[in-house]
Amino acid sequence: DIVMTQSPLSLPVTPGEPASISCRSSQSLLYRNGYNYLDWYLQKPGQSPQLVIYLGSNRASGVPDRFSGSGSGRDFTLKISRVEAEDVGVYYCMQAVQDPYTFGQGTKLEIK
Amino acid sequence: EVQLVESGGGLVQPGRSLRVSCTASGFTFGDYAMSWFRQAPGKGLEWVSFMRSKTHGERTEYAASVRGRFTFSRDDSKGIAYLQMNSLKTEDSAVYYCARFIYGSGRYYGMDVWGQGTTVTVS
Image (cartoon, rainbow over all chains, first blue to last red; front, top):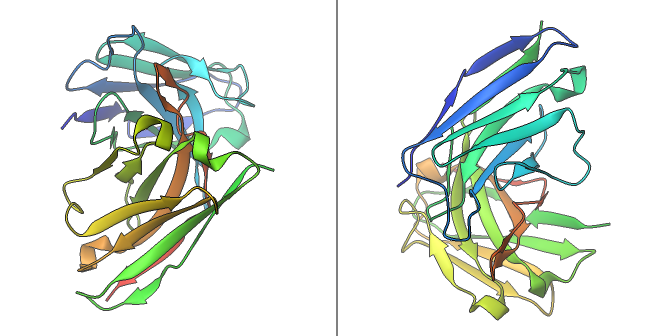
C-alpha cells in the first residue's frame, strides 16, 4: 500500500497569513498519462470532506484561488496564500493512483 | 442540486449484518464511479471500496480490512449505491460516507461530491 505522510499535523495560522501543508508518498503518484493522482480534501468541523484540489494542482469547482496545489512524483504541497477564518478544519491528502486509495494523517488548521 | 444522501446506519451487534445506502440526485448516476469511505470516531479518513461505472466494467475493489465481508452494489436505474456489510466487527464502527468520481479513459476529477454520512455502531 502507498503510505501518505503529511506535515505538519497541526497548523495555527494568523488570518491573512499564508499556510503550507506538505504531503509525501511512499511511491510515485505519477500515472502513465502524465498526471499525478493526488487530491486534497478539507473536512470542516462537523462536516463531510470536500474536494479542494485534484490531480495535484487543479482547483475544484468553487474553491477560491487563494488555494493552490503543486508537486509531482512523491512530494506535494497545498498552499493557502492568505488564510481566512472559513479555511479552518482538517486537510487530508489522498492518493488515487492505485488501490487501496490512502490518506495522509490529516493536518488540522486553526486560527491563532 | 447535485446530492448524495446516505442512510441505513445504526447500532448492530458484532457478527451481524447491515446494509447502508447512498441515494443520488441531480446528476446522471450511471456516468459515475462511486466510492465508500469511513471515519472512526476521532480518526482520519479511510477508503473502503469503490465501484466503477458500467461503462468501465463496474470494476470493484475493497480495502483489505473489509474484503470478503463487505459487498458494493449499485442500481443505476434508481441512482442508489449499496454497501452490504456482513460479519461486522467493533472496529467497523464509523461514519460511512459515499462519494462520486469519474475514473477511466484518462479522466479523473477527484471525489467531487460527498454525502453527509451515516453512522454505524457495532457493539
